[in-house]
Image (cartoon, rainbow over all chains, first blue to last red; front, side, top):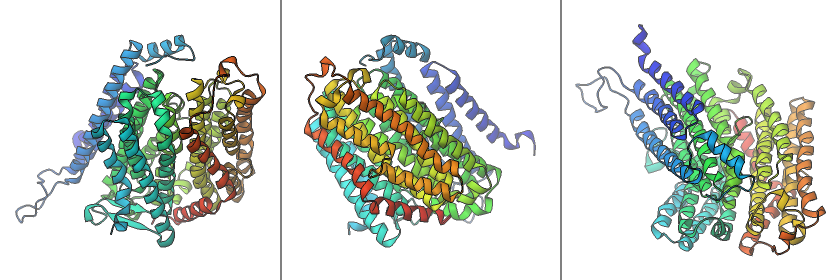
Length: 124
Length: 493
């Protein structure tokens, strides 16, 4: 087995680690969401890549074909993509409202603004 | 026959109510629909509970696709108990929400609150009822996304950032869960939980299965706020609208605990988790840390809702302690506490919402002498507090009794003693509230304060009464929990 034998897994794991690192390391809320999306995308690969066989066709019963790809992961990931888009959309909508309320999308500036506003806080 | 379709209706009723509310676009109509959906859910959950207690297991094939190929809804004594808890708190939260939401959310967004409430309810019920690992992920995300929106409706701008933080943490948790499920699917070729349990034996102990266990554990523990993964919880509960905080505190983390129970005992099997891996030690350490450190943090909060939130993290420690004990008494205690703490913390957050409505603040500095101006609310808080401590005749006592028994069965005195010792910390933070509420001179600002409107006070006090009821009459809760524990300890089905 060459280095490329597990190519799809290597890419998946690289994206997973990279995405999670961006979420943790970046203070900018939009960049955090970018990292979150990369993390979620890595999962799409994790599911889909093993479902594909070289030379496999769609699972249609026909004597001419003997090798089929597994369609279930594709269907699952269609659902997961929808979930990912909904999460990203909601996250960005929250960032817009945070920007309106705080005038910033940097985590440290938001926390500083909360400290400055005192324990009673401020209305959104 | 409608009775045959109860498992589907359990989820479909609130799920359909949500778009109807959005179409109606009116707060009042939305409230009525949310009420109808909540009470219908409670009726269905109780009917399923009765069926399960009589017959053992209800399996429902969605769209008549036979499991394990199709999605199966599967109600056993564990899930039926969780369904009752979730729909019970929804049924208490819905009437309460009318006045509470009117005061805390702008009028043009009321219908959106009721729609997301129904979505969150459908998601939480779906998690408890589904027998399919991927379907569980979808419901997890339905409930989570609805929850983020509900938290962001809070009046304080800090609610927005709390919702964002919860979104980040919750999505990482759900993504970890789905990575774990993907790895299990690669190894077994099935997503049906019962089928997964049957097939996992052949691949038990292989590296992908261990990785799946690790991902699922960390992902779900993020969602259930196990110490030290609880960072998102206090702000989310404190700045969300009061009705939201009460509903979430009673249900969201509890349903995640159900998922953990399901995977540990029904899918992986207790021997794989606790005998071959050091999971018991890990959970014991984290649970005891939660019981002492998070409860300790509750003592030093200057805000009632923050105190209740940190107390929740401590109380989750009791539940995970029971899981780690992994014996009949410990697991019974854990499942009873899941229910009892849901009821107790739900009632406390509802009452805190009454205070927030009338006083406009839940900071302790503003609550001096509240016991004289809001006597019923404060009295309810004290009863709920006693249940947190675990005083006999309250629901909290029942739990600690079983946890101590479980610790003794494990042959470990320190573990049996830990819940008792940490109760003293609970006594400390509850006493702090009592001292502020009754023993201090009333702040002049409180002179005009009255009790909250009846539509809020009645559900809150009724739930408080349940804390006492379940402390005296334990046959329902302990009976259901011990049957659930027996089922879980029976190993993979």
